[in-house]
Amino acid sequence: MATGKKSANTGIPTHYECSLHGLLTSDHEPQLRTRLEALCGDTESAHHELHHEISCIPCVETPVGPLRREDHILRLRIELDPKDPLNNNKAANSICLLGHPEPRSGRGASVRPAIFAQVFSGNAPQFLSLLGYKHNFEFVRKGYWFLYRNTFKIIVSQIYRLEKQGDIQSAQLTDPQASWIVQVTADALNQEQVPRTCEQLEEVKALFEDYVELVVVDHACLENRIPYS
Image (cartoon, rainbow, N blue to C red; front, top):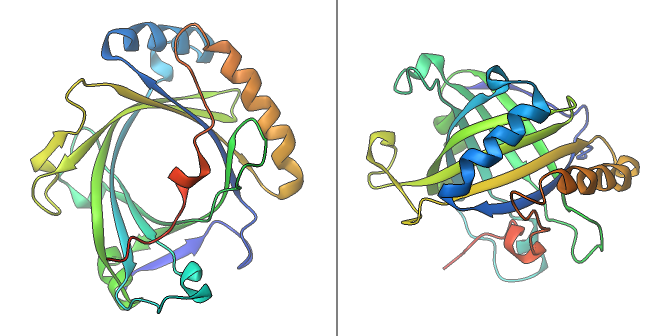
């Protein structure tokens, strides 16, 4: 059985993910990367981003009613070694629960609670199965990220679908235009920190306005609702 450790100290989420997103055409990606290198250090400041994410939903569907809102998607995030992506011994696993985003909050960023539990040993997919969860969908995210002011993680990546379940070698780019997704995130440890974190994200947004338009994603797109058929 897998063993892990929560990143939060209690069962109540105290970690809030504040974020902005943007879409970048392939021909503009090199300019953005140059800008990031100038702001965050140099070419050595870039970190590889190679994740395999598996979305899992409860095996038993909660009947229609208020309690269904309490059903959540659990995400198994597998951080792969870019130099040896097929070696599971080099992969880092974590289980993620993203809560419901704030609806129409008027803030300058998307805000949602998040809990992460790192899996240190054992079979993570089997552990999720024992919790009563089953496979829903999966994708691979590939790109790079920079850390700005030791606070803001700026991820520039592309999404790949898997033609064969669980086989990352079958990954195919989802966007035929080969666009890049830009995500800027910062963590607030409690609700009191959220307003200031969102203000700081707006300041970061201004640094990239000539390269990519960073926006607040509609909260409906970030809902953690389970697509029961």
